[in-house]
Length: 479
Image: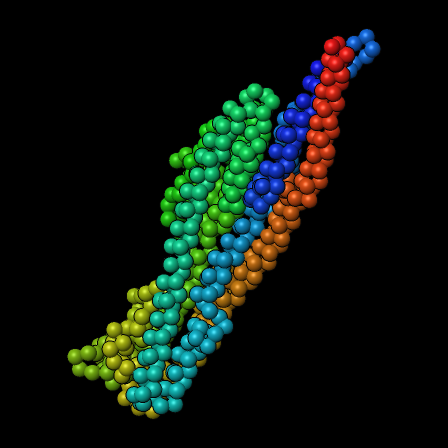
């Protein structure tokens, strides 16, 4: 083996250790970069020189610089992160619904209803007292106003959730477009069969991680270095091409996800987007529907009793609500507007809103001490025959119990979603910690690697120095 061969071997060693040093420096520089995967220099022996004495090594070559990444750990993290995102979003929406009700509270609807029915009890004690009638009028208006506010708040929550879902669909389209573009770049960069496009692969993994926060994804590696991405069983990224999502319809049970202009395989794709779609199509409409049922029950039950009561204002000439010849059984004055049967529209009737003297306390005409109407309405809140029980077509319940049941069910659902969010968030954090232990940069490890590289580099330099001295000795002998 010639001295030139020794110099060549040492030179290759210097070049390999320089590459290793540069890679370690790059790892340390990116130790805090989110989504960066530790890079590793893979060395391979150079082709040996075969001689009669045997095969003599000729040095080392850099085979490639690869990422330290485990796809199984990526898959596990994305699955847990998607679940955590779904339950967190669901918990946030349900918490917002709970906050609309604000129970238990001294200013909640439960207390407002209690005060409303209590004011009828006070009127029963003073059937002709105008101040007591005014209090009933005010408390009735408070019930209507609070239900109006609840309905408006739920509408606003629905609007905000729709805006979030729309933005998430836009984000999905951006991520899928980005992943497809990165696929194209990676395939081109790795077409020589020896290069690994580490930074491009990191960027693609980061985009897929972000996508998995919105919807669950499935990723399949392709032989050419690209990755196909699937959502809900449908292909959204195929090589360098990507699909486009969109929303169609309106919130309230008809909002659906579209893929390339056609109906998506499932209304709820899962993840945070799926939770938002479920909220728009199920949870918020259900809360509104039950509030509407509550408002309708209040209006119908109170009016049914109040119409049979007698009031001086209701019987006044020119303003009579009844025809004596038809055998009237009351002044036929509605306390609430009978045409407004939803939480968003419930209001006092025009007569009661304009004049509290239209409020009836008794069921006998001109009997100033009669208080039967006031007593019946005062007991109405706990009358178990007033409303149909939620989820049943035959069982009945009271107004107060119906509302308490609504609040309780939302509270339980909120608690369950929050607990699940905590569990899956912990699992996602553990999964991320596990994959970071593999692909993350440890500065201590890199410093140890630098020390080894430095020693190898110095040894290779020493070989060159020695070979040069040997060459000089030969030259001196020739001279």
